[in-house]
Length: 172
Image: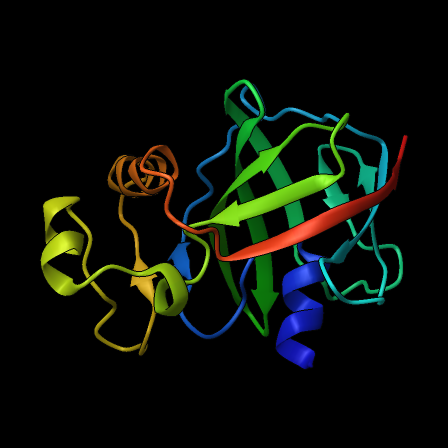
């Protein structure tokens, strides 16, 4: 349940088992977009609600100060790169996912967020210039964002099943 809570709090961004991560932010101030002020959502088929609120140049969970701070970059209409900034003890890292969302439609889907759910076989990773982390099982550590975007958008465009689906309950 803790993993699910952190995942949802970050608006669809994975924290632990099998995520795509980098030690550098990939969404600049200039590229960040803010499609809502406040968003309440839930995982499809579940009742627990989660909320994100814009705070400066990031989104935060108003109920959990330790939750990751989230940014979005629009890649094309209704498709966003989502970046969650995590601080654990003194270490900071960023987790990535591709989000398909249209605020006029209640369904939001996450693609390529969990390496252990959506991750391809090693040879497909290599085809996109990705490799696992030596020190972390089921993690994909990124030096550059382009190979990740190539892989993630190819999954989306091929119609592969999403990692998880959410439902927007309300937004402002």
